[in-house]
Figure 1 (tube, rainbow, N blue to C red):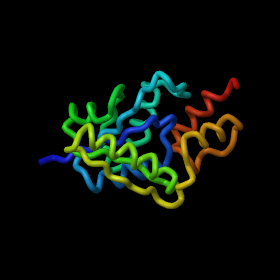
Figure 2 (cartoon, helix red, strand yellow):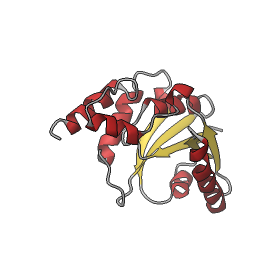
Figure 3 (cartoon, rainbow, N blue to C red):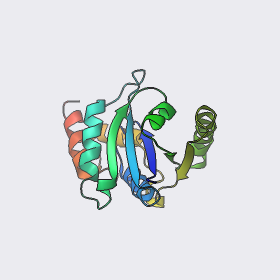
Figure 4 (cartoon, rainbow, N blue to C red):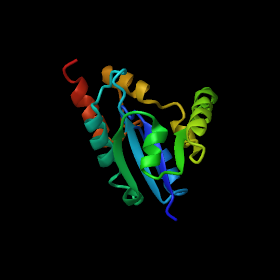
Length: 164
């Protein structure tokens, strides 16, 4: 049986830490669906379609890219997971403070979908302080981005903030 896991997030933008989690997940599951959450209540820097494009371009160079697809979703993650026959939800946990919220979400998702497990993965320690929020802040101030995001994302961020 082919195992499918979802890795959901806003990915606004995708970071090297996200890519590290995806790579780790490909070692555990046959197929990973990176699911870009579209939340109309949150203002994103990149549109859902832009984020999907950036993720697809970011994963291309990796040998595991054939086992990863990228899709947009709205609504409850467990409903999307059921539609895609996923058995697991991948969540990245960088710090203990992340874990408290993620643990609450995992228990809620288990209540809604008992057959879908949540798997917590820690990124390489060099990515534990990186977040999309921090990356956007650095980009807004025209700081060095290359150690935080893939090259295609650096270019996209520079373009977004060029006129600001």
